[in-house]
Image 1 (cartoon, rainbow, N blue to C red):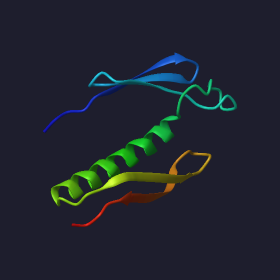
Image 2: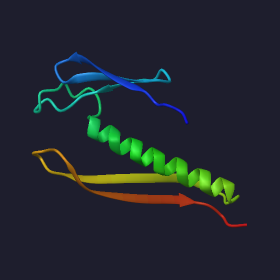
Image 3: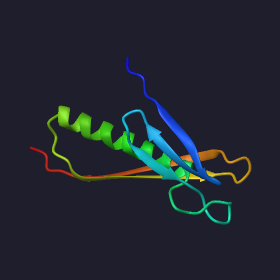
Image 4: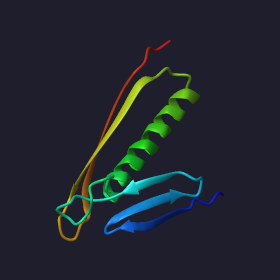
Length: 102
């Protein structure tokens, strides 16, 4: 079993930098109206990106093992949230890809 690590540090106001255990970094922020500088995605947006990325990697991996060709995979994730408290209410996943069966 492997252990994943992440760390988030405040840069200025609500702007943060997130670092992964593997050395990658990304700026997280929020809109100016919400008190941020709007210079990076929100943490919730990054959560959706991670969800779409995990879904895409699973689909690609499964199809590769099945020796099924796949090109141009796109995974879109949409979520509905309440404003207060900010909780995800519903997620929608849309997958689109191309391939030619043998």
